[in-house]
Figure 1 (cartoon, helix red, strand yellow):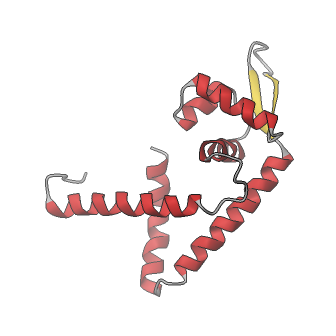
Figure 2 (tube, one colour):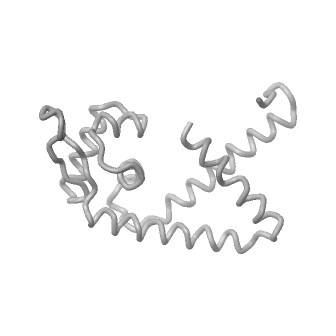
Length: 145
């Protein structure tokens, strides 16, 4: 556990926070569809990774309130990026599923962002690249805590 009263740990946490925020902002500018908000893109990404889900499940995964997710899903449905289907066990609920159009857009977006990151990685030496590769699973874990 980091000791946030100790100078080295405090400096590391500050450096990590700052770097992640700057890199995130730069990645957000690498969008293929400017009409979608970052939250809408995130919902589509969650559907791509986790599969179909109810609006309530999506709200929990995205850390938003259910009414907010209902609005987001309605916007995505109007753009034909998701479709609502009856829940197989509870007819009072709906299941949100991404469309082929959404999957194609996500693939294009990932390719563009991966290419952007690849250009940044080209500026690293072998030791830095090895450290970054080793840190990737830890950063992934932090993103999902």
